[in-house]
Length: 318
Image 1 (tube, rainbow, N blue to C red):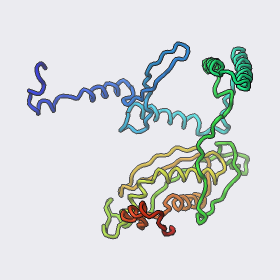
Image 2: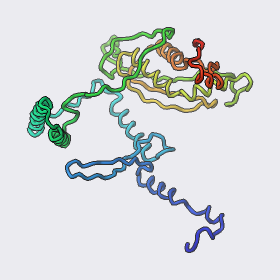
Image 3: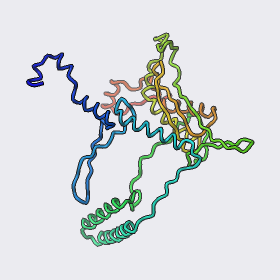
Image 4: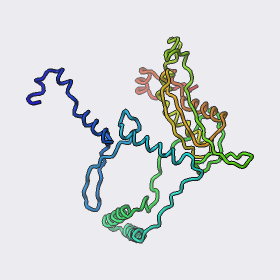
């Protein structure tokens, strides 16, 4: 179409396909990510930089169908090849090459010279540049990690629990992903799996997905549980691994019920007793949904007064 597009009627313009949608459709048909993440790649040897598009890695088809399909196939392959393994997969490390040994020794010598120059009060810039160049050569040679080890402490997740939280049984931690082995009287050995379904509590009677009594239905609690459902699943898996004693491996999916509450289906390698699973679920819900959010402890006028007069006394949580 030639001429000014704005001169055409609006109905005709709205019927035209959007350029971005055509690009997305073409990318999806070719299996290319439609939400790539641009990353800057720097070549230290040549001193050049370029931008590389990395797939987004989304797991939801509504965000990126090609990446979601790729992840789905990957999970299927992992489940098919690793679910029934009776031993831990071991990846042996390769022996270092002569070049890698030479570079590590060279770096140690440069570090010693750099430390001596620091004690003598000399300029450290040339030594730092030499060390950076050797570090780049080490990475290019295929070594992973740093010769200095871990120089910074990583982020640690808090495992503190409330004093009034229900006590959970705790087994000795074993560095394994294999579940418990059962042996029959005839000598056969079994390592069964377990399917777990987590359902949120009732907020009121439901009929065909709608509350029978809207005035008595706990909408606030239902909304809060749905918003924090991911935290519930995360904490449930933590408690599950703590009670089991091994690194529990699982495949799970979340789907909505008719009442629109999230619903978790989880298949785990290994088994625990039904009593322990119920105990873990009860303790997890108690831990995640605290403190209470249905009682006002600080209003807007109190917040403004707090800025003028200092700290306000806050009533303790139930």
